Amino acid sequence: MKFSIMKNIKQIIVVVAFLLGGAAMSQEESVELFTVPLSNPSSPGKLILSQITGSINVIGYEGAEVIVKASMSEQKSKKKTTNNGMKRIGNTSLAVSGEERNNTVRIINEQHNRRTDWEIKVPVNFSLKLSTVNRGNISVEGVKGEMEITNTNGHITLTNVDGSASVDTTNGDVKVTFNTVSAGANMAFSSFNGDIDITFPKALKADVKAKSDQGEIFTDFDIAVDPQKAVVNTNKSSDTYRVKIEQWVKGKINGGGPEMLFKTWNGDILIRAK
Image 1 (tube, one colour):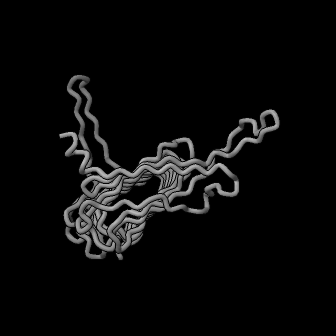
Image 2 (cartoon, rainbow, N blue to C red; image 1 turned 60 degrees about the vertical axis):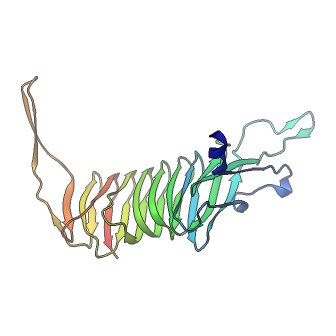
Image 3 (spheres, helix red, strand yellow; image 1 turned 60 degrees about the horizontal axis):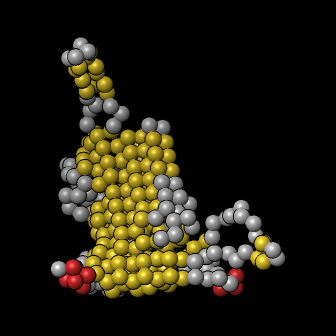
């Protein structure tokens, strides 16, 4: 049984070590590391990539493989640069593994203490699960599928995408442009400190739920806004009666549909009709 499972997994491990300054991998130059073939090229696939430091750029193309490029910069160190007359050689080695199983491609970067910027091409019909934490943005262009994108200190930009998305960042803007959206799919777009700017097809049908604590909400859709209602909470044990009016703006676009949630604490929300 163990053998049959391993037969369905294709794994590629790449170790790139540049030890001479003249051959060092620079942050500005992306190097093609490997190409991952799919088990079933005619079916949709999925890319999974989670890292600590660096940017992720994913581009959809008319192909049947996942093409992985990366550039890496050495983290600045306060360690001494000489030792008994010998010079320290910058360590720009890169250890990356890629694994494919049933059209799901997982990319793993084993060196968490160095910034790695990715440029990855995927077939157009591909779902994405991407995340990064520090010193990087996430961008996606021309992909059709389910997208789960998270960042902590950076922007998220999805351009000319189709399908559905769940997008969240802490310090950064969120900007998404949909060509088409999946019917019946709920979506969420959030940031703590940044603007939310989402463009949908004009025929979108959705229930909107939006909130900005320190900003404004704008739209060029004709949204039928629901009147705010008081929420009553009764605590029998402490004999308290509490009435609260939420700050959420709720309404319907083109009669309503799946829920579209927009939330930021410090920033504006823009809901655009394409």
